[in-house]
Amino acid sequence: MWGSDWPHTQHESEHRFSDSLNWALQHIQRPQDRQNILYRTAAAFYNIKGDDI
Image 1 (spheres, rainbow, N blue to C red):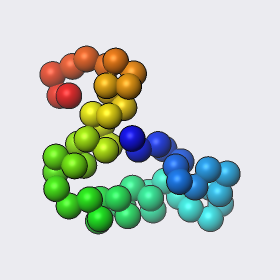
Image 2: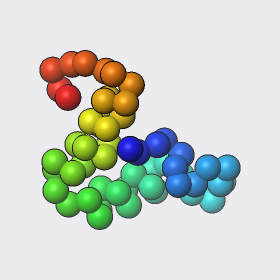
Image 3: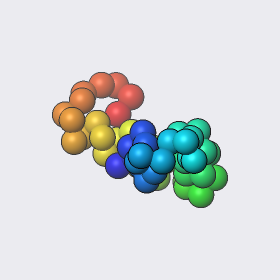
Image 4: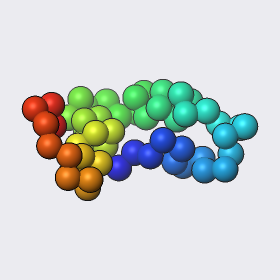
């Protein structure tokens, strides 16, 4: 599951969210893997229902 400041908690002055997200998008090549990591896992954890899950 992706977190907004993970893996750089309390280091916001050194690493921006956009840096981490760009890294993930560069290294997670398969669209299905991106969906699972960036969206579906959190949606399942928080029991979020919707058409886009």
